[in-house]
Image (cartoon, rainbow, N blue to C red):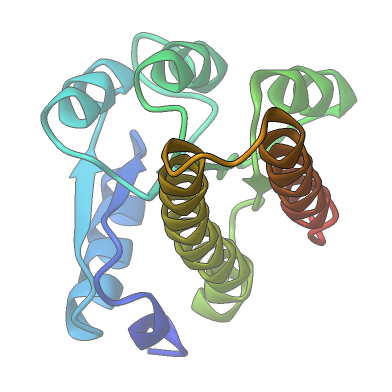
Length: 181
């Protein structure tokens, strides 16, 4: 499968009412050795994210029961750090605007090829891995700043250290928001 091996180790959830979509994506991911959990309804998807952490959540707009946008709204409350990818067979500008307001990261219209799917997922994953790495660096830097503070640094020096951290966090946030959609 094209490049799916680049997302090995990433937990992905697929919510789609279409059995053929679930089974074909599950097979493609399985052949590449990538974990994919599948659900038929949004309600099953919400149960899944209560039990397990997912880095990527792919979901359809038209689902049995709760629709995809309502799922997104509820899921973001429970699992805000995941990347949410809407995979509808149709959508319009109003849906796009609502999805953006709710925090969608990508929309990939069906039907799509595995190349299109991976071309959209891989940048999200690489960005998430970079964000995790930067977060871990920030934690280490914050621990160092606190340690220096406890060793007697003056208040103004502590403030300048925090200003540097704010700048680095802002820069990281701007880099994140400037990723291609």
